[in-house]
Length: 246
Image (cartoon, rainbow, N blue to C red):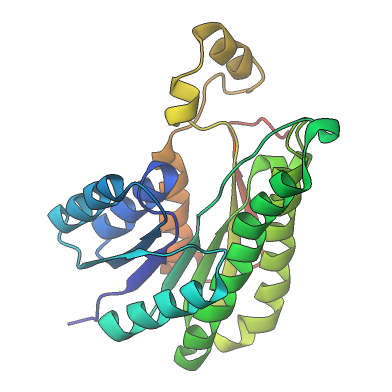
């Protein structure tokens, strides 16, 4: 019987992270995920993954802390024997126009979104290099591809993720490790569901397909990049945006 693969997803307690955990559990993988706050939401993800037949490891860890990333990777390796898939999904926003944005706002977003990705890449790459296999999926954003007013810090962090993706893909391809990025556009989340209908309609008018995507759309793309169906794809940025970036 083929050994079950193990996926580690950062920021897996809700939203896109939870959808990815559930989709990869459905694909038959062991699931490990990190969260930083709201333990009740983490418990919901854990319970839902177990209901799908997955073994689950839930870890409280702040990805902006390199020692926490290293400890999380070692914990997953000890529990399951391998890390076959890493999804760097944890991220934050602190939006404001440039002239009102503080250095703290800029630093906080870079520390989680860019440095957090860097720390996890470093911690998990060591394990994957010894395995001579693995798929790494980094969460960028359409904002990292085309920019957005009021999100200079977020755009900088997500553009950095694209640069790291392409560079690491070149470094580790010969060892059987693939590194790709997802760049979601406008996705239905807790934040967008709280928006007034008028504001939502204005957003949707900008999208050629006419509607916002769902967390499941992002999870489906992650499942593809985690699978052998994408075995000859590395260093790519898959934009999932209903045509917004065209």
